[in-house]
Length: 197
Image 1 (tube, rainbow, N blue to C red):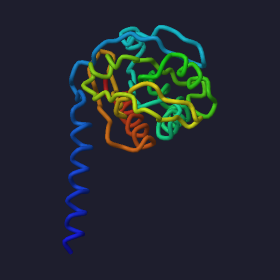
Image 2: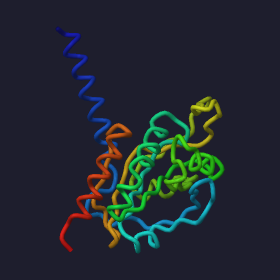
Image 3: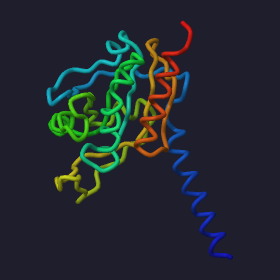
């Protein structure tokens, strides 16, 4: 009996820690910090500007720990699979991580993950993540990606922001599995598209 109570308390504590990390992020109604970054789409680097992208409609800015890691591979693949649904709702998608642009050129072109459909931006110093009130963790020595290559950069928590054309956050999605994160973001952009103008 004591063990099960201790186990339940530990589970509740861990859940609170996970919630507090997600709650630290910017929230619905907050101004989304504008940013520019070197990004990659289909293996080609380009300069991404949130301000310019918002001229075309809402932007889904999704932060993820690292390219070529289990959850991030699944999330990128799920975004790619649902790309046409996001586009039909008028939304642009950009992933942001602390990966180098070289790693992102490979990741953005990989047919198993971004599949040439999702742009991913390099936030090598964590400046963009911090502007969105996300925690940035230092690199962990000896950590490897799913290809067996060393991960030599830090990471940030998996959190997605749906940003409206007027630069406000319409939804903050955190604390979910990679697939549920994408599904919640898609529901948010579809809700925006269906709203009366």
